[in-house]
Amino acid sequence: MTKIATAEQTEAMIARYRHLTGIVMPELALDRSRKWPVVNDHCFQRIVLDAVCEGVWYDHIQRPAYKNLTYAQASKAVTLCEAILDGSADLTALNRQSLLWRGKLRDV
Image 1 (cartoon, rainbow, N blue to C red):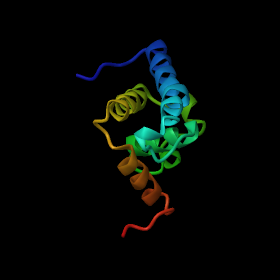
Image 2: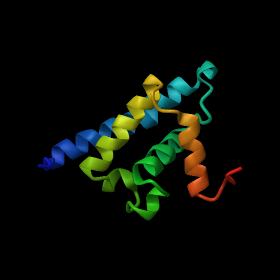
Image 3: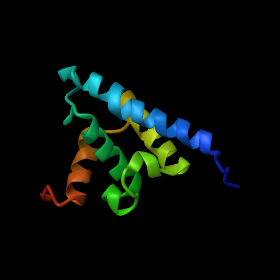
C-alpha cells in the first residue's frame, strides 16, 4: 500500500531537494577533483529532474518544478541526489542522458 504524504512532508522533501541541488552540490562541484560536468544549481536540477521524469522534466511537471513536485517525485530526486553525492550514481552519465533527451547531444 502506498503511503499518502501530507503537504508538510511534501514541502520538507522538496526543501531537501532544493538544498541539495541549490547549495550542497554546487559547493562540492567547486572541488574540481570530483570532475563533475556541471557546477550550477540549475544544471543539477535539470539533470536530477530529467532522470526522475525519464525525459525532459517540464514535459511532465508544471513550471516551476519546485512548486509542483509530488512527494514521490521529490523523494526520488532526493534519493538520486544522495546517490550522486556518495558516488553510486554517475553524474556524467546522467547529464549525458539529460542532454540526449533534450536533443543537445547526439548519441555516438
